[in-house]
Image (cartoon, rainbow, N blue to C red; front, side):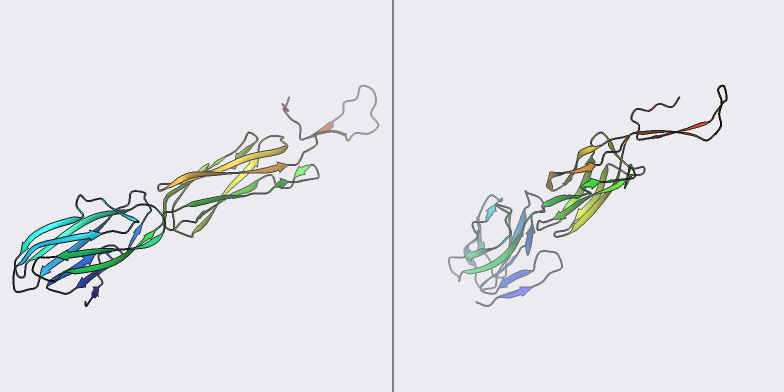
Length: 277
């Protein structure tokens, strides 16, 4: 009935040993991180006949809970007769049935015809997959002052949060703009972010500017994806205030008579489709 736990440095979550005539040790990962949907793990059992006699018809069996499924061919493996002091190693490959975070326990049992049976119970943690959440932060309205926009350039922010349970790898984002808006010089439409750990949040800025004389509501979107999550996107709108077209003529000279030349300054503001002469 005695149980001993040994911690290793191989990422296997330690080994649980139950002494007996058939000494049994079992090791497996402490957790299975479901950062990929087809993640598998190994359960390894180490068996030694510590009795002074031959153990006859030795069998070793893996018992799994509902949340784990066997990927190997045999749940029960027959080892035959084991001489005194003989050892054996058995391995099973398993996989979680779903991505739900949970703690699961399994058993490994060993039996023989002429010695006491033995068993080991171990648990492992199922760590759920990554999941990305995306929001956009942007000004709802670009106002005008003295017939000019208060901001001739403005920032859009994509805010990505990993609300899942494990790391998202190869995170990418891309901005899609409507006609009338474009990214500022030096900016990039696509931005690569690398990895995003569980619970981590990052804000991605884009500098955007209007093109030409435009007004009204403009809809844009940001898309995000990673190597081990699905794709998602978010939309937002900004309203650009109307600018009034103006033409102003200024004449500096005074006391002009017919036939005199004069200099006039023509000031244009917010003229659409203007072509200089």
